[in-house]
Length: 64
Image 1 (cartoon, one colour):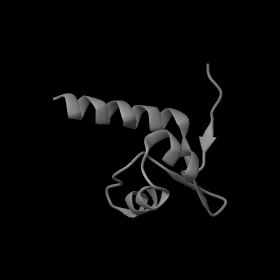
Image 2 (cartoon, helix red, strand yellow):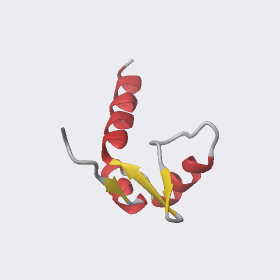
Image 3 (cartoon, rainbow, N blue to C red):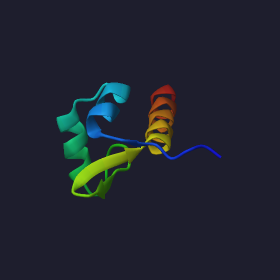
Image 4 (cartoon, rainbow, N blue to C red):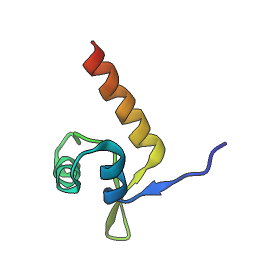
């Protein structure tokens, strides 16, 4: 079992190539557009595994 790793919005921006502001905008959309995020202690955090799953779904959509 792997350890849970929480990422900041800036870290997710580095991984995905999307600007932090874009990720912020997506987080407020309903349904949420980008990777799933959580509000933790008044800051938004992303689980690394959720970001990876989201990236894979985007890859599959672009290949279809």
